Image (cartoon, rainbow, N blue to C red):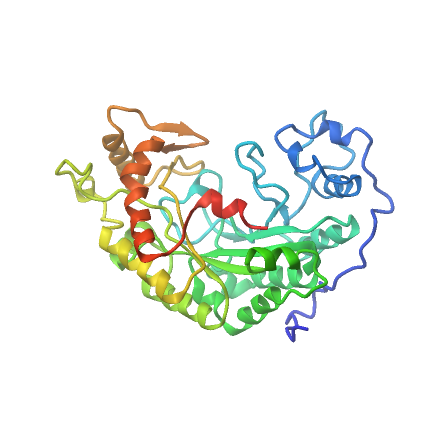
Length: 395
């Protein structure tokens, strides 16, 4: 048994007895037929009991709308509420975006299209967290992976003051059978490596034989908990330009080493991958011609992959950068310039536009952006996974 005990005695997160279903609320007979078609695959092929539990947890109760979508949970939510399961097969999994917004201010962040301008705590967070955890027990929802966080860094500066990520981890631990893999994504591994966080992370990874997914984890070699660290840059000059308020490179390298020394599984996200000078290779154009700091030289990528090998990360994650149109503020000058770089690279083809962002045509992105990186990974013998593959393989 783990010796970890939550510090906050004012918030009770002890597990409740599993119930076959709620006492007063039951799914309406037509709920399954009313589920939006893009989410319905998650219900297909499941037992009636599991279908009922998923309806009760994810769908609004007593709604008059003809089509229902997973909108009910307060904090422990559907992984991606915008995407169809046919194109973004997240399945039944959870995301806890601990804070609203993020203080790192990274220019290329995909969350710029929907996140608030300033980072903030979520209103009534401790109470709502408890209510969602209690509902998982009350409705007897089958276990699924949980991610902290997709749209905000769980270890951003707010965490040192408020401790809401720690509270979420304690809640997951108290209700461990309701969750399978626990994944954290951060640019601040030094805080994750602090002893009090290491204790709860270790406890989350010490899953015993009574957990319904123990055999699955053993068979796949997948850990029950892991920390994904985002580090796309090797030189701090590049980090300071593209990640202006995120921790320095040296601090992140030290944090990764500390997590590995503590025995915690780590994935390094060399993500996103950005264009490299010259632009394109047969021209004389450079990133600096567009007012941009060179983000990732081939030597930078060599050093990042070599570091991954040295510390023994599970694998690295990559994807080409997208240029997101912000929802609540003007696009940063750096992203305007990067858009011009993309237009140069793709000419005479047009950039792809969809879901609020511009992307390079697929074949061009592979040839110019990802293939040189993957060749380094292959030579150094470090496994590299595209971001979507990394996501859907979590069980």
